Amino acid sequence: MKHVMIKKNQILKLVILIIILSACNKNRESVKSDSEVPPYGVLKEIKILDYPETEIGSLTPWDVESPPDIYVNIIGENTLNTIIYTNEGSPIADISRDSLPASIYFDLPGELRIPDLDRFYMVKFWDNDTGNDLPDDYMGVVSFRLIDCTYGDDPYPTQFKVLQSDFFVEFTIEWHN
Image (cartoon, rainbow, N blue to C red; front, top):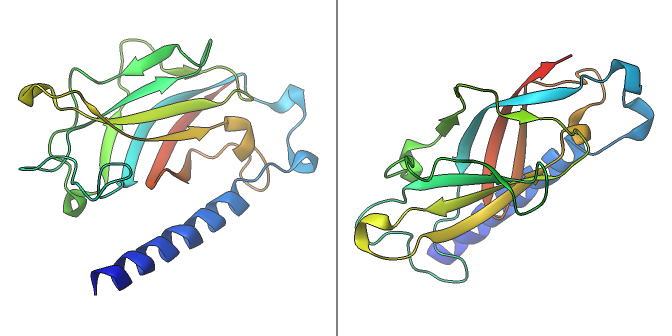
């Protein structure tokens, strides 16, 4: 029965991915001209809608006695190795699948700017295992380019969703001229 449930879950995720990719697929003909494009977006929230149930390539749950304590590293503003944000010191504790969605808010003293609409940004998800003397577990990554969602009737959406690495997340962006 569990095998059938996993297949249904995988099929549902695949259908969601296809819908998202078709909705956020870059259409060069409908992208605004350079003079109409806001110079940057500000990341306000990452909402975790779903995450992988087990460690990558395994059937082992993230934590034995509790759900994962999730934090993110956002990478890519200057180079692919530059972390522009992390909440490693204050992960969201014990995120069970029943408690989803879970949000990471960016109410920083400064703004978390996404200045280059055409650059790929990566959000790497980690399970914090600091309290039990184990290395943190890499959970997966979601990448995005803001330019991929700047088209159609809503060329500057305040929210968009991405499904990658069995992570399903919703980003909230504030656009600035």
